[in-house]
Image (cartoon, rainbow over all chains, first blue to last red):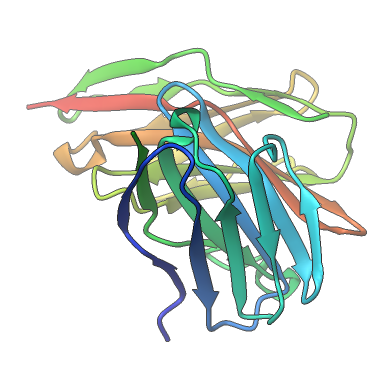
Length: 116
Length: 116
């Protein structure tokens, strides 16, 4: 049981390049989230998904797209990377049945993305 | 919209002493959950303690306890007998349940340093 796995763990991009961050969970969770973490800003929700084939905008969605074609995967895409998107990105998943568990939201280990 | 405010960007405490981290939130919801997460330098997000809004009794987990004041929308974390391993970033989080999934909101974090 790997939990939430993010790939890659580190990446450096040039301005204007595109890339996709992959999040995979093996817990059959309904909900998946993408956050970005910046100094002094905490975790801010980019996009989230409440089920396969559905996505919704979070607090800071501009410049990002997401897809959830399979329940276990949640992809975050940057079509044209900008320096302002330099951040640490966290994926998380949750489930109603684990609401009262010790881990209501499971996090990946984060992806450090630098845009030059 | 929900907001979570942590007004203490940095705090320090002597080993074995007690420290309190503050958190306030703003919401019109009546049923919600509150959490404190710990993020050590490894970047992992670790759940420290949780509180259901409908419970009047303050949650406790070993050396960690909360002071939940629902009317004041305050949710502070008290760490007793501080240990060097408590050094980390601490995030207060609010979760509401909606028909479209559970949504989490995070504060900006408090960086805690335990001094030997």
